[in-house]
Length: 292
Image 1 (cartoon, one colour):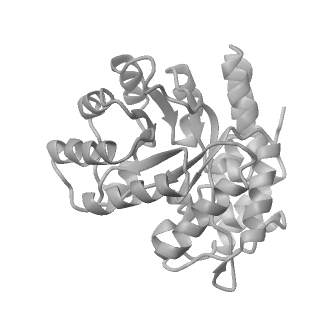
Image 2 (image 1 turned 120 degrees about the vertical axis):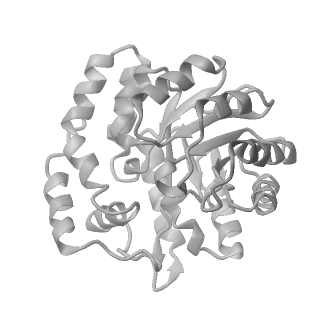
């Protein structure tokens, strides 16, 4: 199966209002991102505070995002440290009409590499959708090896990986040792330039909830072969991008969106609103945003 996704994919936050999902704000956010260059969306990802959503809410969010995506593809998160549960989530995403699934490396259990491979094989066999692997060792405590990624890339519907580690060398190795039709997606906004230089098909950027036009511009410039201009645009906005990660995602991102009047600054425990100190950092960084 050929990878069908590319460009700027935005993993959406889940807006809340008085403890409930704020669908009006979510619709407005999707429209804002689509208008400003998004090529697709991820729902139920890390940025969405998915562990705090009920099964009913998860289904509702997927359906709502699909209905309001303006025709852009919607990839649903379908990850768990229980393989049977991950398979159920992938099947549910398929039943609801998602265009693909993003599945995180099983966390906390600390499985061996053979277990990780078997886990993703089960998900792959469960649905006829494109499956994107999600390697984020800072969250899971487990890092997928390049060898494991290479082996999994040979499965018919595992079409790419969101690489959210800190190693530029690993980005290069993934690109080098996997087939041309296996898509590398940058999952670490600070390494966007390095990922595109390594042959990435796109970026799955949480910060793009706030500044989609910036990441759309960076993506477009790289895709047009204007690497130096893309890097310059990234550098102009590096302070802001860094500020959006002063606290665990999506804390600062939700604060920035609330400061823009797009959502309420509300999270579900155990996530908490941004500290006053870091709010000042975000406020100052937002003043110097550069689009071109």
